[in-house]
Amino acid sequence: QVQLVESGGGLVQAGGSLRLSCVASGRTLSSYAMAWFRQAPGKEREFVAVINWNGAVTDYAESVSGRFTISRDNAKTTVYLQMSSLKPEDTAAYYCAADITGRVRTRSRAGYAYWGQGTQVTVSS
Image (cartoon, rainbow, N blue to C red):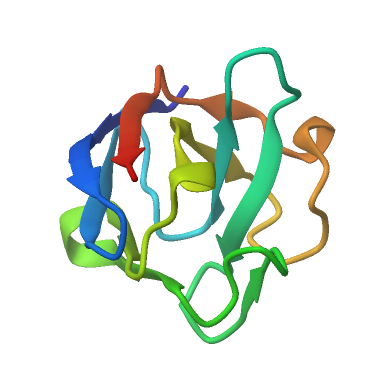
């Protein structure tokens, strides 16, 4: 069993930056691929970024590519999402998720067995 807890959300002006963190407990994080998803009010939860078990492979949604960076520190069992040049359309609840295969293989929510409770990011114009 894995527990994931996100933090770092908040209110920021357009063009600003935030760094989200996701701390894992319960089992080792180092063998899992980790992803970030987001869900805006009235919309489906969508893929944002994913990183493989050792940090060597990443994938990003086109809407955030070049602005967001996913990284991980397995010693701290933590995954990060550095968000820059934020836009109002980035406003959403952000969730981290774990894929037990360890590989970057899917952008589908169905591929992730464990989820956090989310952290809210609000970008004002």
